[in-house]
Amino acid sequence: MKKKLLKISIVGKTNAGKSTLLNNLIGETLSITNKKINTTEDLILGISNIRNNQLIFYDTPGLQQIKNINRDNFKLKHNLWDGINKSDLILYLVDITKYKFDEIINNVNKLKETNKIIIIIFNKNDLIEKNIILPKIKELNEKIKIDSYFSISAKKKLGLINLQKYLLTKTYQNKWIYNENEISNKDDIFITNETTRNAILDLLHKEIPYNIKIINKDYKFLINGDLKIKQEIQFKNIRYKKIILGKKGEKIKEIRKKSQNNISKILGKRVHLYIKLIRSNA
Image 1: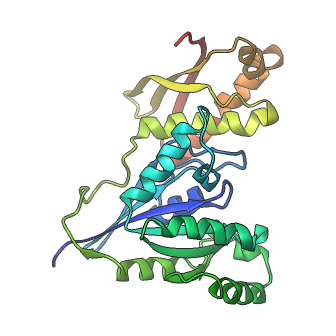
Image 2: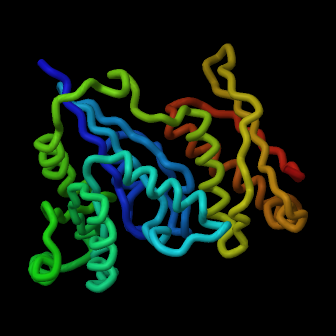
C-alpha cells in the first residue's frame, strides 16, 4: 500500500483549545494546555500514523500574532507562520462561546492569502445549545468560502473521529517524513520541561514571569525503574526569585509537586523531580 501524507497547522486565538485538540488527536500529551496567554511558544509537531497515512500536525502560537510584530512577539509570530507555511491544510479553531463574526472573517481572509485548504472548527460545542452553530455557518458562508466546517469538543473528544476521517480524505501520495513509531519532534525532556513551565503558569497567576526558561540538567532512570529529573528555572530579573520561591519556599515546593505528579501521569513512571532557581545573565 502506497504511503500518503498530510501536513496540518492548527491555528486560532489563545485558549481556543489548540493544544488540547493536538494532544487528543495524537493520543499523547505533547503541548501544554493553560488558560494563560501564549502558553504555546514553540512550534509543537505531532504525528499520527493511521494505516498508510501520516498526519503531521503543527500546534502554533495564538492567532493574534498574525498582525503586529515587535521584539517581544517575534518568536511567536515566526513560529505561527512557520507552521502555516509548512502545512497543506489549516484548521482554524474557534471557541464557539466567544464567537466574533468580523474577527473570523478578517482572519480567514488573511489565511486565504496562503492558498491553503482552510477548515473552520467550532470548538467547545459541549458548552452551548446545539442549534446555535448552523446559523453561524450560514452567516459565515455568505461572506467567505472555505472547504468545510466542523463542530467539536476537543476536551470531551466529541466530533474528533469525523474530523480525523475527513483529514484522511485529504492525504496525498508521498513518502512519510517521520518513522512509524515517532509521535513528535519534541522529546520527553522537552515535554517534562514544558510540564514544569505549565505548573508555574498555573500557580503564579498574574505574576507569571513569561521570560523564564526551564533547563534540564539531568534525566536518568534509576535501577528500580524510577525517573530522576533535575531542572533549573532560569530568570534574569532578581525579583522573580522571590515570586517563584513564595513565602518560606512554599510556592516552589507546590510547583515541584504539581509538575512531578503531572510528569508521572504523562510518562507512566514514578518521578523524582528536583528544581533549582538560577539567575541568568545571558
